[in-house]
Amino acid sequence: MSRKPIAYPAQPHHWGWISGWGIPPSDFETVVKATWPDDRHTVFAPTKTAVADVLRIRPDIMAGYSLGALLLLAAELPSTSIPLIGIAPFLAFDAEANLGGTTPSRTRLALSKKFAQKPLTAVNLYLRLAGLGDMNLPSLPYAATDLAWGLDALGTKRALPENTRKARLFAGNKDPLIKSDAFVSHCDRFATINNEGHGFRSLIPQISTMI
Image (cartoon, rainbow, N blue to C red; front, side, top):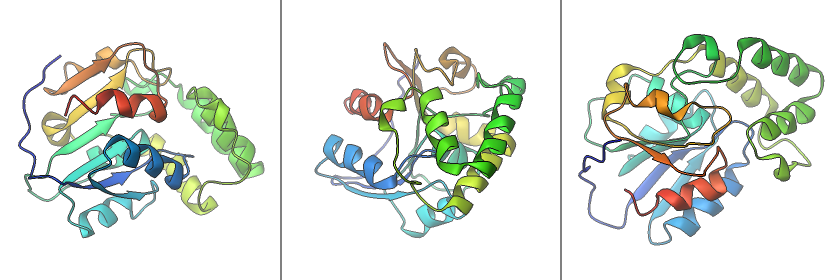
């Protein structure tokens, strides 16, 4: 694990966030605001336009969680010194990609099939797989078309090496969706969070003193 320093702009910071698949952006925003209360936070759902939306607001820090991290890491970002942070990131979601994901492609495809039939059931199933079953959402967290796009993105997006090398990545060593030790050979600024899984509500506060 390496903790090379990153040059952050003067406080307060403006964070541009992309949250995870199936996560209500308002719930995610509540956690990051509580973790960094002196900073400004703009949170986007992980949609087709999310990366462009983050770049449009010109944040001091670009950050993503889970699928949101994958979208940033897979994007052709403009040359910039803006720090890039990934929390519980995927370099690729499917286990077959051999980039740290633990979920077989057949499981993702089954989830997509379930989503086409019963979207809310599929979302809550995924949250259980990720260790977030206590959320048990009563309604879809954002538009069904965006959720369907995100499932496809999980199967097709791959992190670009140039983004992975410059990013600061954090993952729990008990994450059921990620083999955290697989990041060591891909990222110079990777930190393992002990006794943490994929849940953003406990994982994000843990990293607040590390960046």
